[in-house]
Every structure is written in C-alpha cells, then in structure tokens.
Length: 91
Image 1 (tube, rainbow, N blue to C red):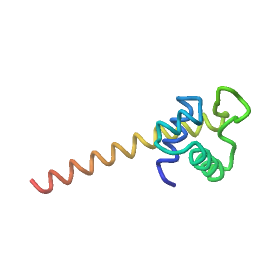
Image 2: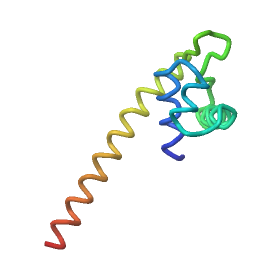
Image 3: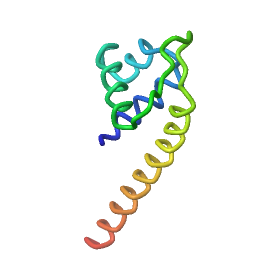
Image 4: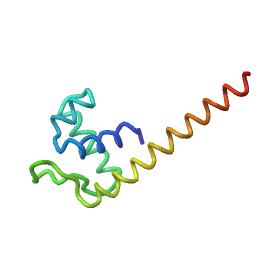
C-alpha cells in the first residue's frame, strides 16, 4: 500500500471535505475520491460516511486513521534513523 492513501484519509478527516482535502493533497476531487475508494477496498470496510455533511469518517475510518498516524510516524522515525546511520557510516 502507498502511504499517500493514508495521508489522504488523514487530510480528509481533518478538513471534513473532499474538495478541501483534494486541494491540500494537490489532486482533483475525483482522484481523491477514487483513492479513498481504493483504500476502502483494501481495508474491506467503508471508511467515509458520504451521506453526512460535513464529511466524516465511519468508526472503521477513525480506527484506520489512528493506525495510519502511528504507521506514518513509525516510518518517518525509521527513515530518520536510517539517514543518521548512513551519515555515521560515511564519517
């Protein structure tokens, strides 16, 4: 899975709007919708309550959002550690 799909979900939750989230993610609204649908297919659950206004995540979407935040932080930490290790090995 691409991490940008997780970032899309996090942005959608913070903006409560497909159009605002799409602007922030630098993609079209239809592209964001397709990417969220792709994430829902991967997760096997509906993540967004599309009937609500403003847009909100389902309980499954909320759970995945928290896991996504943790996963992205973990990946960023690993990347930082790898860069530091690489610098140390070349010093």
